[in-house]
Image (cartoon, rainbow, N blue to C red):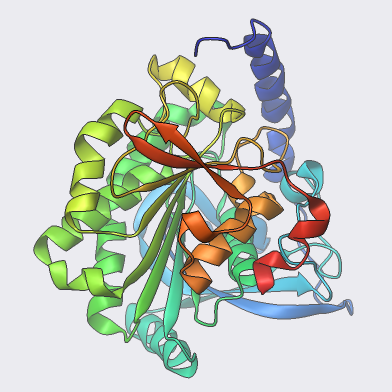
Length: 378
């Protein structure tokens, strides 16, 4: 635990994790959506690549499980309620634990279509060529996440950031259980070569010109490993990477600083690290591993030349302070200013510079709800 951490933090953490453990079972029993009922929503398409097992379940929320399997490709159709506000912070229970999602009120998974890899890349490229900037977004989720939830996060990110090109959900076989952290780590390591293959094929088989990569929590381990491996063999791919977001990275801070960051900066990659001192999930991971995590903003904050570190401790966040990258309007607005408009941190609204022995990092100021309105969709 970091110096100055309240002695009540472990109790808060245990209570919070206990709550998730009790309620997480609800996620596994989300009821199927009756798409025959008229609802006010706009359809969105999310491409997916997954090495989860296909259960064949008719309830789409249970279609892909947590076992390792061959890589599958396809399309997800997602409902975005009409008038859904940009950069909307959905209540924790509604977003994570609702037993049924209404397409006219909630972002919801409506349909899944499997494709062979040739059709997948052909359809993906068709959508790329139809977009004015030929950009694409790949999202890699973290620990304790179902396929269905990863799909909704991917759809929300694409909607909030208002990117013109396709969104791709890379979903590895997370057990989606609080107590299966070690299983998730092992499955993510097993899945990393499949993510590398996807990245390579996106560069080799599509006309993507600006690839945006957003990884969250444990998923940052796979993204950094896969990307470095690909670029070591194909440095020409670097020119087509528009931006990399490492959100709340659940990896050893010192290992990231010593081993991973130098490899990222050697390729001159545009990387932003989002960290927080209020992230209870990473507090738990730090306790489990015995060392600070790269996504924590305390005395061990990671500041590396060539990588922008943004301290999002003051940003809005859900109950556990871990999903501020997709559930906090201020963080979404900051990501949008960077990815969409290439605004450097020194010129972005809502950030102030903080001096550190290793350089400068950026801290989000206390949010002003009125100032944030519409910022993410300028």
